[in-house]
Amino acid sequence: MNLIVKPRRKPSQSRAWMTSGAIQDAFLLLVVEHGYEQVSIRDIATLAGVGLGTLYLYFPGKDSIAAVTVRSRLRRLAADTQAACATGVPRTLAETVHVLARVHVHTLLGEAAPWRALLVLERRITPPGVYRELYKAFVQVLRDACAVAIDWPAELDPERSALNAFAIIDALVKNALLVQDVCPDADELLHDVECAVNGYFQKALERSRAATASA
Image (cartoon, rainbow, N blue to C red; front, side, top):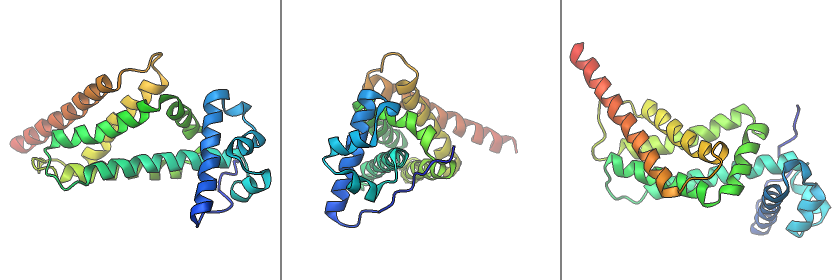
């Protein structure tokens, strides 16, 4: 399927950003309530309080609104995660994992229905290159935060460790929304995520040290 998802106009002024944001918010509310296939461009424009002509100045169609909405929400989540780690307060690796995981878990489970809809659309709408770019942004945030932990093990490769650690976080949280019949309690899921990530770091460190000792 050849989808036209590139927005026609990138907002450059505060009013334009507000209009684009209102369109995206209206789109997401309608998708949660009715499902993607049942939502029309006219529905989105009406709920957003803009005319069809105005909407088409920004987006060529519904797929474009979906793509931009997914990207903007994920980029905001990555920025929030980075901000949570950028306090300048020294942290242990376990404390860093807690901060990183908490933002991810509580953001997605705090708005479970909208995020569930976005995650379903992500795989349908987002081109592979854009998906990788967004994914790498999260990995880089985790890598940079963990690498400055006061007890970061020098034996571990930050890049590889961050890639695997984020894969654990991402899979556990997304599957909680997309697979489980009942969305789990956020704090319970956070505990599970921390156990899994900290366990991974511990086993990776043990393996690295064992390999060094036997060399």
